[in-house]
Length: 410
Picture 1 (tube, helix red, strand yellow):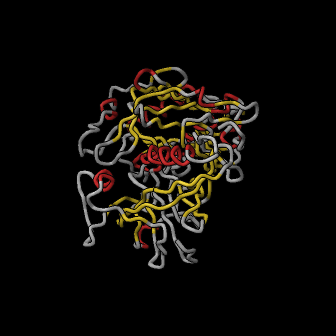
Picture 2: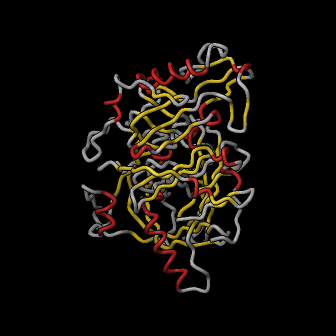
Picture 3: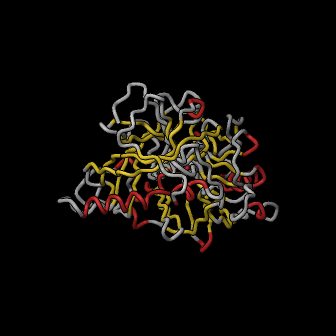
């Protein structure tokens, strides 16, 4: 591909769906070269402010021939990568996928749309801009870094190429794309995307944080291929939140087209979104556990409950407030401490970082774990074993997602 000055990119990533393809390509390339085998890829991730809505998590890849750096926004709820291509897109290394290819069937099942030239068409959805997009399914070269800092080229990366400018709506200023995760809460420091088995080593002390992972099963919806978890209960300060009125809402028929219910992980929403009945129960228990010495104050949009924070102490885990625990199948517990449960909205006011679906954050899921709860947490998607691993806050290990450095430990 030649370098085009007006090349625009929308990468609505679900990079993990194709990570096995990437890993295979890298293994073949490494085994036939003088370089040692590459096991893990790393992309830096920065939290950026958006003028159009919630803050977004952005990374950068290098694309085309010659290589061109492209910014992409992270969205782990997308079914396939998506690229906006202007008509001036020069296609030296571009490879269209034939309509009869198994890749075309995999990307579009149960449909199999084709263009008149027998190339594969495909569709995806921009969750941030709330709009559909379509285009030609193609392969091209993507270059990223390995965990030790070497550049690695993936020659046959799959994405949808579209000329629909409508598809770009809602992205942060300067962002031409989308991608999954160890997120930093600060705009001034990077988190990381790791693609591969690790180790995921953070400083200080060369800590392999993959050793702290607790695993639970994930299920992908038959049509939408999003990551759903089996949430069984919620605890506040070690006590079960009464669930008689809402526990049924956590169930979900994952194998059918019914798209409401269940619990999933996403990066589009800044905070965890809950059904209003569930959130009300959580708030009641949280307020009781926090105690009468921490008075409530007027709510600040979009939050459902806020507090006078002058009496809340600070610790290395954030504000000293009751721990919220999400209990999944096999009794896997994701602990949410103050750093991920409280948002400081002004000098003397903090709000609980969980929001109601009725407050304008629409989600197909009953509970959708949002970006704020993922920050300084390592979350690993193990596709081969259909499970998700989570570390809970890395602050409890005296490290954070901004502490990755490229070193020779691949």
